Amino acid sequence: MNTPSPSMARIAFVSSQSPEADAACARLNARYNGVSEADADVIVALGGDGLMLQTLHRFRDRGLPIYGMHRGSVGFLMNTFREDDLVERLAAAQHVRIHPLVMEAMDRHGTRHRAPAINEVSLLRQTYQAAKLRISIDGKVRLDQLICDGVIVATPAGSTAYNLSAHGPILPLGTALLALTPISPFRPRRWRGALVPDKARIDIAVLEADKRPVSAAADHYEVRDIVAVSARLDTSSSIDMLFDPDHGLEERILREQFVY
Image 1 (cartoon, rainbow, N blue to C red):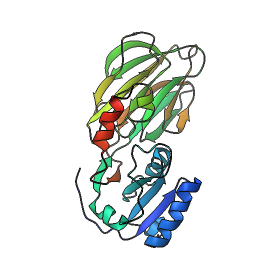
Image 2: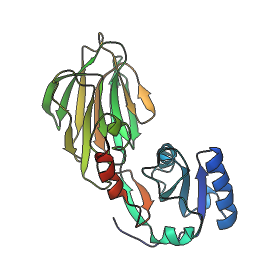
Image 3: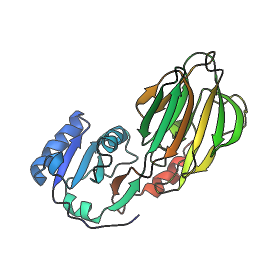
Image 4: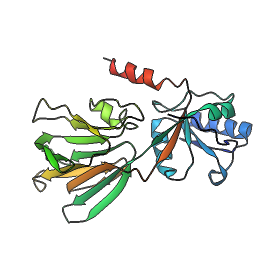
């Protein structure tokens, strides 16, 4: 993390459109003379982690840092909501630059699909039958056959979302790792996933694709009936997130790992 100090006098506010978030947005717009997104130095997102994900996608590669304040249900990536001293908080905030994954998927018709994923790339079975997958890292087969409901490739930013629900590890922001997490693995029964360097390319082949169809999703973008997927970090694309110095993300990461 570093703390650059560009001017952040012009603030654009975005809301999850819940009553609580909209009311806060109206007050903050009036108090801090909110501007349009086109004129902004910084975006302040009011909601939960879902709204943060939408905002990160929306402003990817626009050069505008995103500062979230919690006005929603889940706020792991959000700062504490407080209306006072917002300009000072933005000036003192720590910057974390994140890069999305890029998913490249081929469906059974030979059509190729490409989409970014800030949280995760996930493969999921489409029918009652478990998926059969083969996993390769940088061209080397690491798992000949995984029988499961699916598998997740998660970034540090996404490790607290679907990945955590599937019992995957939480990765601190800035960690040079990706989480590879199975969903309900049947064989090999003891495999619980892997940590992969974020420079690696992860290739997943769907075995018996006609009999056991599988879909793939890059965050909210889904492709059905896929036969192969690759996921890798796209270092040419980036988003800056802003956190209060006392945000306590490390403490939250520790606390989550001891919840039972």
